Length: 296
Image (cartoon, rainbow, N blue to C red; front, side, top):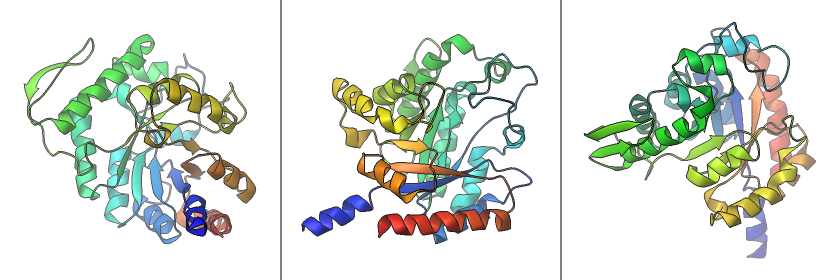
């Protein structure tokens, strides 16, 4: 029995892959099948509607914004294609910029892809960094966090109520009916992306998980902040099992992956290049060998 528990713990951390899908990358269907065949648990698609040429907000990773940010496909379209080509692979937005999207239409998109995938959708959300991009959508940068929270709260009502209504400062609608409802109940997991500590607080307030980047200007490795997150969860009366941590970014090092796994990380995400499949497969196979070593 003890050996069984150890084996279960060893398998507990999942590995996902992310791609900025473009018209010059592999297709979502190709990538989805390749990941599923190699034992990855999930495929993630980022979102940017566009990238303005002006720059009020610096690129979080420093330097110039990469070309793939300008070129990326819509995540819901890409992930629907990947879901249709697979049977077990989870598909997730990494992340959906809800502060730039209408909540009623987005609620329908989420429910629709959850239906088409048979309940395999993960709703990664984020509030965004690009002020110019948001302002083109009519979003005020300074109030984006409250706007995003209200939109997520409103979507939860739409997914769970036959007659939904919501009245907030930014989102306001009287009773209405909207279908389909998601396959997953009460709704697909809402995984809140962003840096420590603010996105961690948002994840604990209204999310079903937290997606921090591995490194940001504020810290070298978010893993070192896991004790602080556990303390925040306790103070918020949240069971850690209800807010699993998915770290965006991993190094091809089995020892570091074991450290993440044993330290309570639920999943790590590897970002692959926006290239044709034959260029990406060698890197994916390298990771597959590391994953097998991790599980051995």
